Length: 259
Image (cartoon, rainbow, N blue to C red; front, side, top):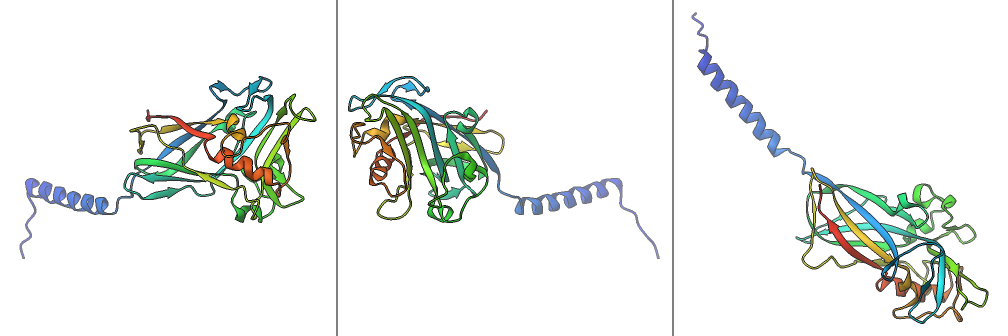
């Protein structure tokens, strides 16, 4: 029996064909690219940055200062230009004016593509409200949990105003049961003609502004002489203020392309 060996040329051709075959198989099983997106919040009072101790004026003409401003952002969703949606898992973020680090966070494992809409809830969904005290952003040590009613404060604003009967302002907005449900979901509009590009190599950013003045204007104008305190989960005034801030407190100031 005679054995023949491949010529060096034939061997090279065979190796190239084999490599091409395996490459094709790898392409068929390739995992879709994913990327990240930074989400940034800037708290303001109208056209001015929000600073503790500075005096601002509501649309009703009431002067006031702010000493605390916290809120939950949860259940974040992104919608592609083709209509498909991506939702963040365990999506609970607590934004605090007093903590600069809390005012930005990163979304990960987002399918690469072009996104046209951002949607999120102001507050904490009802399922987590009845799950008792939890950890992370939902830890009761964050001072956003009513232990006596097993529920979360969705937004907390405190300060002072000479128009208040006591001189103090305390707006603790929460409640998830009808008729005092204050959970609100919003989709701030993107700047005209702008979409968000998510890629595996570059990280874009959405920069939002939260205007504290919008708590007191909109469908339910607030005057501090009549309403200066909401402090429990069944306060109808909390529903009015939640409707106000859902109507326009959050806007997308700009989108920054990835670098």
